[in-house]
Length: 79
Image (tube, rainbow, N blue to C red; front, top):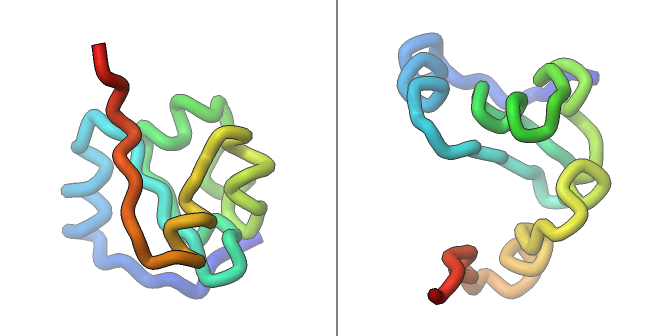
């Protein structure tokens, strides 16, 4: 499945160079875009990931709650 989200080649290169995974979801919670580290942690190519529900890909993802509430949540663990 493909996404209607368009990201410029320069922006793609910049985000792909980040070490952290970046996932972009649409209002229904479907994956609209991810960077290379996102592909690496899921073990799947971007083409196979796009359009799927993020909660099916990352079982513990809370992004859908952020989308509903508008409030961010920290994913950092306290030691």
